Length: 314
Image (cartoon, rainbow, N blue to C red; front, side, top):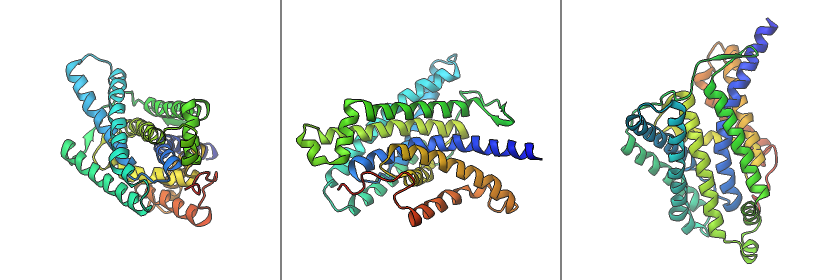
């Protein structure tokens, strides 16, 4: 019985790591923008959705033009095509919606962010329709055993790619000239400008990088669940925001840790609490656990588990 329970525990943790990898990538977009601008970009989840649906459209085109192209190659090329789309979208959102309100009261950009989110949902609904789109299995979904738990190659790819991207982002922020400019802008925009940093350019680059991460996260979600639709980014964005708050919004390491931890909490909650309640609070209610975590964190530790470095700078 103990071995069986250990296998179940490992299975839930692995499922949580897959979920958490996606949450972490999206949470990084939230926390980067908040770090340099003090703004919660609630339209970020819709950028994730645009990334997934753009990848799907490009993959269908490639499949029709090059029917013999291997599935992983189709997915790779489609993702590489969707990333610039999301980067341009992120730049446009910052340039058109947020930059004019940079010196406005904090409530104005927050309302604008919600408006941009609704606008992008409706644009996606017009372009791709209301229906759910099946996302082809370009990477094998054949399960295999891993120390008693079951995984699929697509889940392994999700975790590996997420780790590589997060490591690359940390190197970019902490070891490059661009990263130093981003950290200086987050610390104090006025002083950074006096030191020769182009504040507008750095803020735009931050949106662009966050949008690129969102595109990859959207592909991960669609590939993992084999489905994509115009509303897929809304709840995902809220959960990623929860992950950012959990880790300490404005802290890159906190966003990563918060995303992974939230994914594990969700998975364990849906599995074990569902069993304890006879299925009443099972996987169909797993969103409850994420937002319960948000409430607990905001009540008992508003700065997040790893603190928060830049919230008071503005």
